View 1: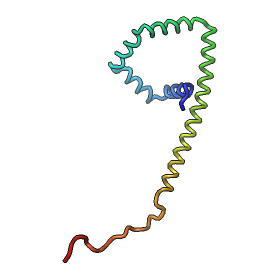
View 2: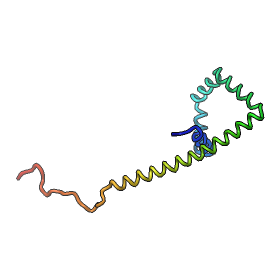
View 3: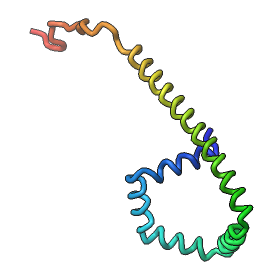
View 4: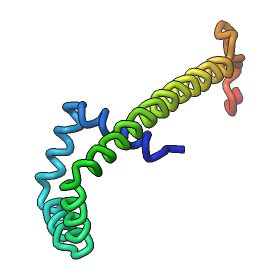
Length: 122
């Protein structure tokens, strides 16, 4: 349902949202988060991955290729995200319409009530 490209586009949009960034800052200031990040960054596989990334970033042709690929992925993801939002809005509107149709149409009808008191005999 959600492609990686669409999630990437959503992430980039979220990073433009000041409220979202305030929440991210709160999370990053949390001691538990800091401890978890320390564990991640001390992991040998993570260190090796970072070394490989740094080496790759030294190759200007590779950087250009990655930038072009990323730009294309963001464009595709943005299109997918907009289509998803459009379909979601349409589905919500349809659901709202269906709920309206399910409501009783004649609200002027009153419930039948009895003038007799139940359970009391004179």
